Image (cartoon, rainbow, N blue to C red; front, side, top):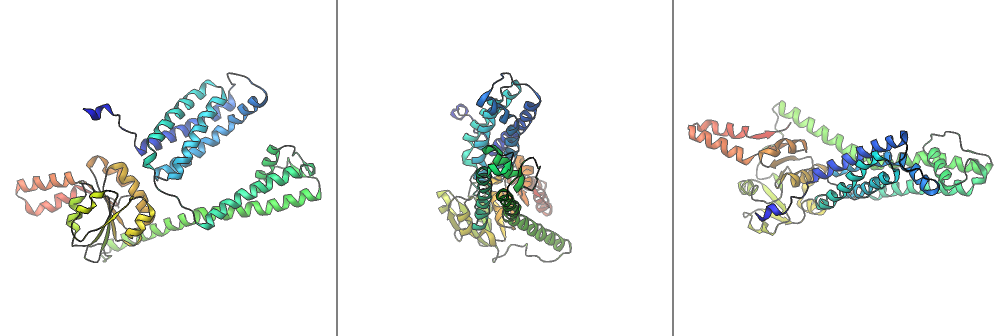
Length: 389
């Protein structure tokens, strides 16, 4: 009865959906603000803020869609950025002074509440190597160089009178758009513009390659290995799918649902259990236990996830989605999840190669036993497990 007095906390999926809704609302409100009149006409600095909010709200909306994608993969950085952007989206709704921005403000307030209550569900780190950090810093450096140089040489440009003009010139020139409304009128300004044309596109290309190149390469390699494995299975070749004493299996979580599977694997393969629970000491003999956060990269490195033959995931549905997202980014090994039947489809979409419902397997085996059809017990039990190809 006491549990009914405590409302259930929103899941990570609810946070992703609310951020997506706020993103779409921000885009729609920004577009609507451009074609409608504000409820309160203002001038001066407040008028400039109102005019800027008309188009920048749309940009915030698209940025929120990107953060929602990152949150779907449980990135902590995406969550932190989403919190800031949701607050900014609400501020845009207030600054626009329009009736159509009221839903955006309400959604933003509700979204902040949901994000605060789900902060612990996003723990996946998004580490950048030295090359990627340097590429990002170079983008910032080129932008600062262009803005400061254009403003310092504003007397040599036709159309640069303020910092905003300098920012506009830098973005247009570095991106090679070149509208031509701002142009250099002196030799010093022309040489500066040439340097910005050379540095801008080269820096953008190098940054895009360093940030997205490794992810694309890993995805293509993973897809190729899966296709090769499917072709080998279709041809009846041995590809090492059978579990033997030399197989390495990493188990993420040690809850009550997954412990029978851990006990069954003991002695048949080399099993490493990663769990944040102190109850790992009760695991069967011969099972290696690693105490630590299962989503932490250092913990997974200690468990040897990159070189294992298979991964077994336990826990609740939201925890499993997070664990599978982390595991899939580290290893190409087969991932099997043990969960109740209601989450079968969701976990297959999340990246599991197979999802097993223990209750369905037990029920099928019991029915066959009552029918006295021993030969079909294994077949009926296997049908209770879902295999995704």
